[in-house]
Amino acid sequence: MSSGLEKTIADARTWLVETALPFWLETGFDASRRLFHERLDLDGRPIETLARRLMVQSRQIYVFAHASVLGWCDARDIVSAAFSNMVAGYFEPDGRAGWIFSLQPGGKIADGRRDLYTHSFVLLACAWVFRLTGNAFAIEIADRTLVILDREFPAVSGGYRDDAAGPDATLRQNPHMHLFESLLALFEVTGVPEYLQRADRIRALLQRFFIPGPDILAEYFDANWKPNGLKGQDASAVLWEPGHHCEWVWLLDRYATYRQRGADPIAAALYDRAYKDGISKEGTIADEMNGGGGIIKPTHRAWPLTEAIKANVVRYHAGDANAAVRMKAAMTTLCRHFLRHNGTWMDQFDGSWKPMIDYVPASTLYHIFLAIAEAESTFSQA
Image (cartoon, rainbow, N blue to C red; front, top):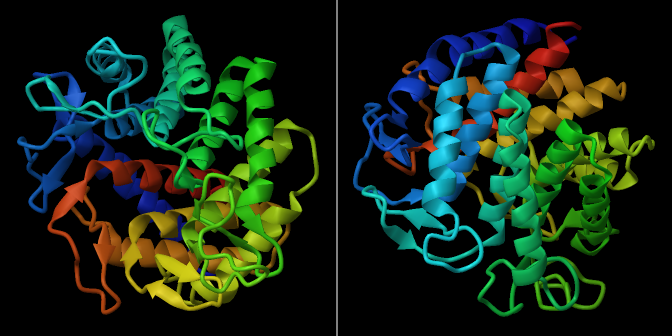
């Protein structure tokens, strides 16, 4: 066990449970609309004029449902109200199939696009609403959403398009990763085999996302799932993100558990490449890399750190002697640079640790909450 790790995790949990969750339940929730705010200013005040993305609503519902299950807060009524209003406001308000992208503060449609990334998070919210409340309507909505994905989003070469209305010109792995996450959550709370079978198909797609040799996970693809930037066997121009490498490590471990299989070899390759080129021993993570090991974006966001924490939870359970040390570095960097005393966070810094944005995106709570929950569950008992 790394020296001081337990205290670092305990301090992060205290911040989350005693400061952040109560603050976001009160200030981050719009009691008049019964929906969550999109973002706050750095003084912790809601920015009322912004459109509210469905992705944010889904993530916040997930966070407070999960936190309530853990006993870290009592948000059952808010979760139920937000879920009900999410369905009423975002699900097919214009008569077209699927979920719209965002609403204006007053409730009118701001952006009527249907995108895969957002639909994937709706499924996660459904799973956790059902787990917290037992409301079968949440699973009904999840199943209707999956039917819509199959009918409106299929890509010609397998998987799904980013946009229901768009061509297959550019496909992305990231929405599929979150769809994988949500399918595992649905299987966990229901035991219904279909959800795990759907996850099997996403795992099969991972073989296209992953480029062996350089051991990188490509982010962007053409309509045939060929990685953008790949020239023959040369992957030096292919873009990849260390944070997503770590996120897949955590997800593949859950999948292997449900499928009663051993550790996924792709997970090990993703982890090793992330720590070889993308993550420093001090715990800092570059936002974007190329296949040759060069840093494309030397900026630092909060969410890749949280995914490194989750990946090291997996590695710790697997007996990796370095996992605790790496966990301590990532958690320390998260607490020192990103988490703020008032229950908010700085979301992104440049390479010199100067803040790059002057607001607090609500969407980041999903990452921070889950990382602290995973670390606390593992290391508080170590």
